Amino acid sequence: MEAQKTAVDAIVVLTGCDRDAVAACIRRMYQAGVRDPKRLTFKGLQEMSRG
Image (tube, helix red, strand yellow):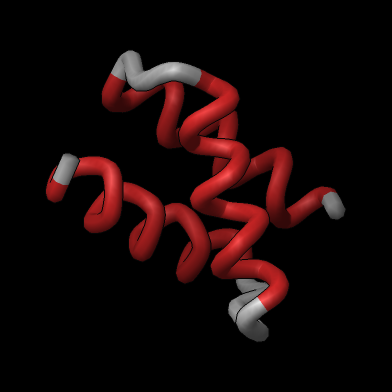
């Protein structure tokens, strides 16, 4: 759970995207097996940049 919170906070600060949209994206990745906060943040930034 801490990994998700860290990733969401970082992505929201860096991109200014909607927190709920970022949280949903991170939650999907976490459930898919990505557990490392750095990896979640990196993959989340990639996903949010795609729109």
